[in-house]
Amino acid sequence: MPGGWQGSNRKAQLPTDWDSRIRPLVLERDGHQCTEVDGGVRCTQKATDVDHIGENTDHDPANLRALCRWHHNRRSSAQGNRARKRVPEKRRPERHPGLL
Image 1 (cartoon, rainbow, N blue to C red):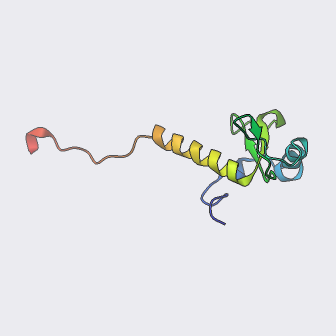
Image 2: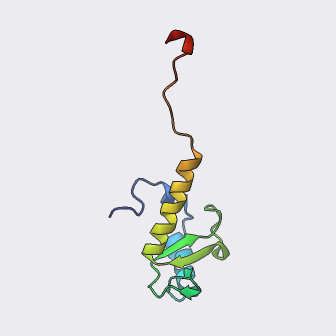
Image 3: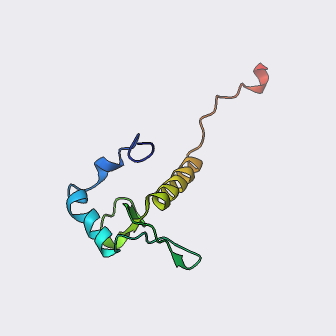
């Protein structure tokens, strides 16, 4: 499956009870419906993913919410793009002007 966990070590960073306890708890709490709100209207799609609202290492249910796959992918993509912009791109060293 494109996207998902491919090329990521994120799953290894989740607690051992993520799939058995935490994820089902959040999906149940949020009624298995995406919690994303756009223009004051809550998404009506089925929630398939659990997203960290704040810090990715805080797995407390208060820091988690249910999202549909589309909204979760959109949010993750935006986070990845912001992270890439913070990391300076590696450049080739410039030649000293006196050596040109």
